[in-house]
Length: 479
Image (tube, rainbow, N blue to C red; front, side):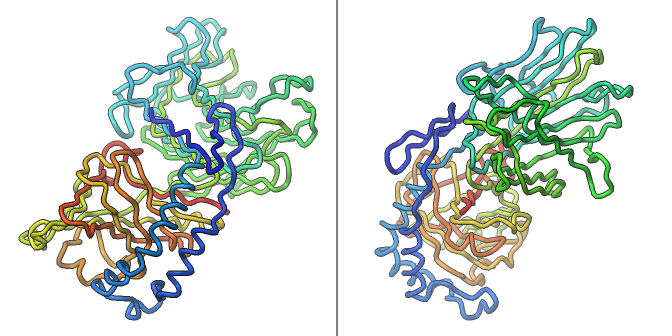
């Protein structure tokens, strides 16, 4: 488990457990950097790549701009990273840890309420979370894990996770119409000081007796509220039915929600990239603290069947979107200039005195066209090095996306047009970011990573690596 708790620009701690309010960044510094780029004619028109600088011209412009951009760009990127709430969970440990970040919610005995990690069915990495609930005596209703971070009301949150329902024995309602089965929920936090008590979840993903997925919001704008006065909103597909959800395979959910009891809220849910829910309006109760995530089975206690499901690769981000690469490769010069490394699990950038033999560059493409309705403020490329011999600057250039990861080579990369210099960041053994200003201008972007410093080298995981949260991805921060 890796949890990132950052300090804001003003020095305030962003509290992951209690949803402390993080200050919105002032992007004046970043915008000033972009204005300088305009003055230096660094921005290119995508509609006519021939107007873009060539590979060598782009390098010359980059060197000229670095002196002016580096301090402002690094300061802006660092400030953005420090104020961001981001956490993830892979469940790679042999046991599920019940600690400050996660609570196990399950009635005893553990023989009937199983919450553990397993290697029997895994999406990425070596282990996943297994949830199983049996109830022969009609006594047990839950087997869940609850994340202790309570959302900041009024902020947007992005949740990305993978779920596996077995072909037999997956959670579902009885056919008599008297039961419910929840498999993921975002639960509100009552204002106990005002006399409130626990209510049904703000948002729940539910399994119905037909084996299909349902989703329900429960909202209330009254400052003191309960279930009897709340509004329930059920979501269906275009035909008015519950949603088909595959069994016997992993399914990835992306949930973007602005938590608020006002009309300024919204909810978007994608299932394996398909936009199944698009809603604008209230998304929560009128509470001081926002909802928290719970994953697992919560059902009517008179369901007696043994039911199982699995989770993996959870990522949570506040005020932004997480975009994983859909193509990446590195290229190598010299005797390897015609060799393709698109299937490698590693991506390496290197600059060597013997350039023809050892130079290497990284190419990554991100497609976020299904988030086209979102207004973006900044884009940051996030990387976790696993090998590095340098603290030199790693440079990012936007390049045209006319390449394929299965065919790209060092030789063919020489013909790619450089669209715009993006920025740079000092390498580190710890995760770091490079701001990509042009990411907010379009709905996809291709980036080249390279060094100018002799003998500098860094390796990161590729999208083929088996641990999803260690791969490079893009933070797209919202306005």
